[in-house]
View 1 (cartoon, rainbow, N blue to C red):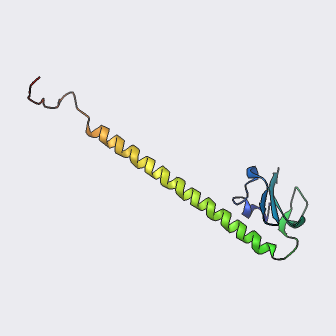
View 2: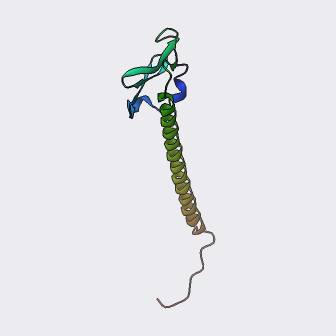
View 3: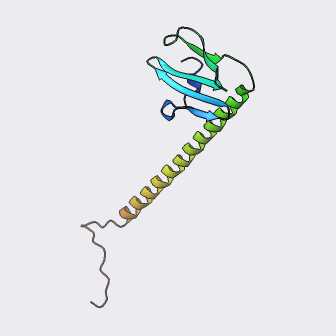
Length: 125
């Protein structure tokens, strides 16, 4: 939902709750979209700030404080880890594709046409 969607990648629902020091991040979802609540020492500091819950809610900071910077740091570190993993996966895919191409090229280079057989080598049998 509005204000929470931007954190979808950093806090996927399937991974569940994330604790970072005194912060606890609770990603979730309902029929109309992604939800996010952040607690600092058990107090909900990020959640629904406007609209009807489950229908038109908007998310934002309920309380301002040092936890906002900590949350920003947490989001940045999680996104950096996601980007690093994606880069690693991309490099692995590229290496696998290059190996497949090389293997195909070697097989194609060894192709012998039945119309033009390879010359036999002379030697003892």
